[in-house]
Image (cartoon, rainbow, N blue to C red; front, side, top):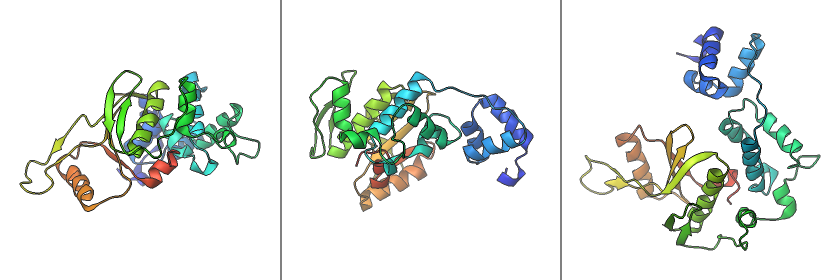
Length: 247
């Protein structure tokens, strides 16, 4: 069904079923804000939701991890929290005291604390950064130990720990699964993504953290799309890592 053919009644029926503008939007290939605007203009009253303590915790963490306001990806955060407008996030952040009156600076910038230092302080540990760590062991809050291969992987692991502790995700693991390309006899025959993330609704994503994309990595990712099209793979490179404040 094309976007132009989506009837307002279909949108409303799907919204009543999913109780989410984002899930409704995904079903019809639309933007969440578009669905929200079309329904409200048609006179339908959408469910108003106050921000929960869990949502406030996530907003606090995201702002803390973003030393500059331009590093904030509020549209992604709105989608994560199932909110139709990212401006609602900005308004809530202001109410929580996370931005100044001009909204140019975040608390993270004023405090000059890195994301790793903030997490360390919250856990009562001595702050230390991992920007120069090439590889090493990392222990999660649940006691699992993983040998991470780069400083960026370590930073991303700590980012996932924040999401886990604030209830944004259900679980994360490091390199638990290997996907084989059965018909390939030579060259790249398998691929093990860096991180496996289980969301609260049970859906699973695999995240690959890459500083730069070499030919072998490009081949792996292309073959994943061919041989395992049902697997959701998210590649986190510099722009994506910058968007969440890790670099």
